[in-house]
Every structure is written in structure tokens, then in C-alpha cells.
Image (cartoon, rainbow, N blue to C red; front, top):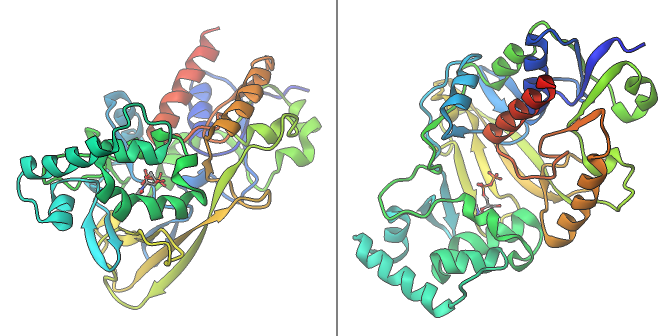
Length: 368
Ligand code: UDP
């Protein structure tokens, strides 16, 4: 019996936005998730009044007014601006790469002075069409910034040489010749007041949700209860790895409660040296300007992904990308399955992009 119009596999942002829009149009949806909570990786756990980002820091940012208005239906956002600080060889640097960083590196005080140094290094490198992350970084920002703030962090984060990673990854970070430590260039930015769970709660209101359900453990039965499936899990797993395994990068989080008000003075501090095993320490209360007497910090350790671990990042190198294209082609022959999200599209999506993609897919689907 097809009791539902849509079975949504995965209660992350993609699945919840899709379900919300379909439900609004009168479609009957069931959302399932193998975890014991909804929200996917945006899920927060409230500890001592602090919203702890359980699966890594999530800072919402977008240039798209429609997406900003969309999320603001469910929560009010504060005016948090992400301004991480990086520690390299015992020295502090502002991120992203801006006039403060250049002053800290070389003592330059004017954009001309900084540009002269950077352009000289870029020219010396001389590569016009970068083919990997290292070449992209060297041709964008020069050798010094690359060596102090990018090389080791990237090796640690991805567990591989920057020469075997795609160029686009480093283009996520702005380079600017102003004294501006805002990590993003987008017009709208903030953290939902009350945490991301509030948004998920709003999105799933009036929709049936079942947690602790593993799609693959009862696939046949689950496939029979809905007309269509919205699948947001790993695409290679959906097709039983028929074209081989895609690679992912995993993370391990170490949460520590400290009996003090302020541990590091910033929400995000990056540790850019390889001899420190974690890439960053998050102090969650600073996302919401918390004034609690204690604090919760999280050390983020990148890890090799194995099937029993969470897949956080797709590793979009050429080999994996080629494999993904085979899966994608195969997925297009599945007329009753909609694939979406970071894992099903094997794409390094941010939250705003996931929402835009879900809205676009649900619109296309329900216009039929
Ligand atoms: N990155 C770096 N140094 C830093 C911060 C970032 O080299 O201090 C590089 C690194 O390769 C990382 C990429 O920039 O994977 C993207 O960083 P972002 O902060 O966007 O990563 P996310 O927060 O999505 O993990």
C-alpha cells in the first residue's frame, strides 16, 4: 500500500525543506532518519544553555534574499559574523586573507604594499591555469600565505597533499585588500536564535517523522509505502557500490566543558600546524554571544572515513568525480527517486545551497 506520496530518507536540511514544501501542497510525507534525532548535521544539543553544534560549526550565510527570507520564517537570526583566527607556529593571524593577515605576516600597512608582495610571489610561481588546490592557492595569494596558513591545515583536513585536491576548495575563502575579517562575502549572515533545531522544528511541523530507522535495513518494505523516494544519503550506498566506493572525509569531535566563562575569546580558532592533531577549536557560546558562567569547547579532528563513520565531506578529486558521474547517470534512470543533498549529489554544498537546491527540486517535482 502506497500510504505516502514521498518517503524522505534523511532528516537533514535537504529532506526537511523538501518535505515542508511538499506538505504545504497537500502531499503526504514520511521522513525517516537513522540517527535518533532530526536535523542531520545542523543538529544542536543544548548543554547548560549553550547550543552545541554537534556535527561541526554551522554558520548560515547567503547572498540570496529569497533564501534568507525562507530561513527567517522559522527563526530570527542574530548578527554573528564569522571571523576565525588562525594559529600558525605560535602566532595569531586573522582570516580570511585580508589586510590584517598581511600586516601580521609582513608588517605591510597599505593595500599597495601588500599587493606588491603578493603579486611578486604570484608572478614568480607563474601558473595561469591552476590544476589543483596548491596551484590555485599559489596563483591566488602567493607562497607565504600558502605556507603559513594553507598547506599544513589542508593536509590535515583532507589527509592528502594539496596537489591532489581540486582547486575550488580554496576559492571558498575570500582574499581582500581591506581590514575586514568577515569570513564570508555574502550579504546575509547569522546564527538562528535558539539554534538550528528551531528551523528543523518549523520545517517538519505537521509531518510524520521516524528516527532510528535505517533505510537499508528495511529497504524493500520502505520502498513500497511511498509513490516516490527523496534520498539524501550516500549515492554509492544507494546503488550498492556497483561502480566502486566514493571517498569521503570524516571528523571526530571532542567536547569539553570548562568551568570558566571564556576560553578562547572567539567562536572559531584554527590550528594550522600539522603537529596539532585537530584543525580547529569551536567555543560554541560565542555564536550566540552567551554569558553563561561555564563554556563548552569542541576540538575537531579530521579522520579517515570508513563505512561505520559519518561521511562529512566528499573528496571531489578526479577519480572520485569520474565514479560519481557514473552514479549520477545511473540515478537519472530512477524515475521514482529524487536525489539531493551533500551525500546524494557528492557535492561540497553549504546550507544555503542545500536549501536552494531542495526548493528547486520540489518545485520541479510538484509542477508536473
Ligand atoms: N583552509 C586553509 N586554512 C584555514 C582554513 C581553511 O587552508 O585556516 C582551506 C582548507 O583546505 C579547507 C578549505 O580552505 O578545507 C575550506 O575551508 P572552510 O573553512 O570553508 O571549510 P569548512 O568550514 O567547510 O570545513
